[in-house]
Image 1: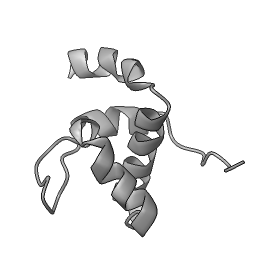
Image 2: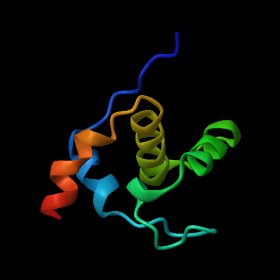
Image 3: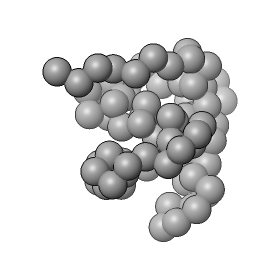
Image 4: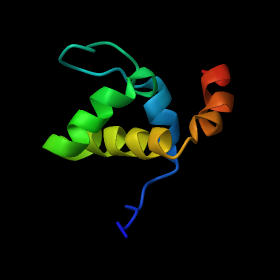
Length: 77
């Protein structure tokens, strides 16, 4: 079983507010990225640093059907 990485709860807010800085989905908020794009990163390797952490967190959220947890943050911001 794969170990779930620890994350800062503030990262939930960051996936709602942070746009993708490059590539096909440049300027798309991370929470709006398609699963296929996140799966590609999961296979190829997430970028290093904060961006990679946010992408990996969003991948885990989407793969586990937990997008509803972001709704209050999306509605607020």
